[in-house]
Structures are given as C-alpha cells and as structure tokens.
Image (cartoon, rainbow, N blue to C red; front, side, top):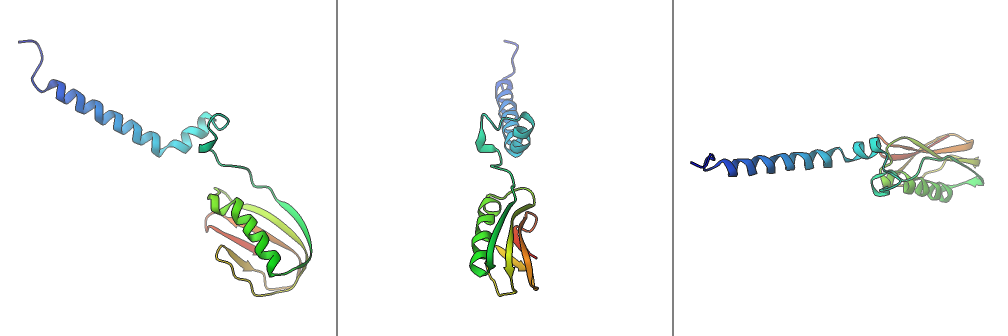
Length: 133
C-alpha cells in the first residue's frame, strides 16, 4: 500500500474545481461591491460609474417641443442610457412655457400649466426622464 486510495486524487481535483468555480462566481456576482469597497476606480475605470449628476440651469426664450426634445435627449444620454444608479435633476429650463403635446419614448411630460421654469429629471427606478413644471 502506498497510503493513497485509488480515487483520492480524483476527489481532490473535483473539490478544487468546485471551490475555484464558487470563488469565481462570487467575484462576478459581487464585482461592483468589491470595486466600490476597494476604491479601485482610478486604476480600473471600466467598473466604475462615469460622472456625477450635475444640474445645469439653461435659459430659453420659448420652451417648445424642440427644446424639450433636445434637453430630454441630453439627460437620457448621460443617465438613462448608462443606467445611472440614482435620481438626477439634469436641467432647469427657464423661459416661457405653454402647455403643448410632446411625445418621446424615454421622456414623459408631466406639466399641464403655463410656467416660467421647467425641470428635467431622471428617475432611476422607473428608467424615464420626467419633465415637470
């Protein structure tokens, strides 16, 4: 006897493979949490959220459907298309706004009165950009 059972090597390799697969799956599942806790965003920026939400104040003489579409697309481009992880007030449009019909697949107009300012914000839970008075 050599002190080793016939299938001992096979079972050792099986256990090693299972352990390696479990560790790899845990790393892939918790990748964002690991990167955020280690703060490796400066070394490996591909795992980090790009940019912060900054509110811009813009003046327009008349806020019409073209202006709403332009700023809605800007807001969607920096938040919704990148699946931004929190609510964001993208723009405050100042100008004369009268109620109009507006349709966009990523934006919802939630303003039915005349106003002097319109807020364009992203809601991450619903995944939409809302335009409010």
